[in-house]
Length: 104
Ligand SMILES: [Zn+2]
Image (cartoon, rainbow, N blue to C red; front, side, top):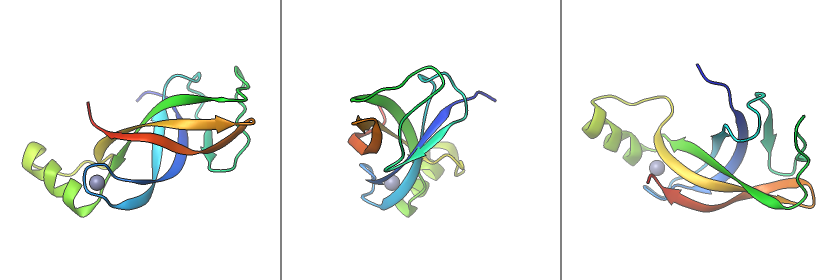
């Protein structure tokens, strides 16, 4: 199992429109199993970013997205239907997700 870092953000699923707090993951930050919620200071052991974005991906387990998974895979994964987004860092704080988009 790979390691990653997590951002928790409220987003509207681009597939089904469900609004949920979703755990988004990234392997770009050193994979130290850190996690941030909206409003948390963004500091890692390797990086202190004041302004910028981090590419992340998460999954939706909304009803329609689960049905989509059942059609495609025959079952529902715990991860959900994949969503891509950018975690926004402003003034050293994780402020939320932008550019939420469908699987590519
Ligand atoms: Zn969805």
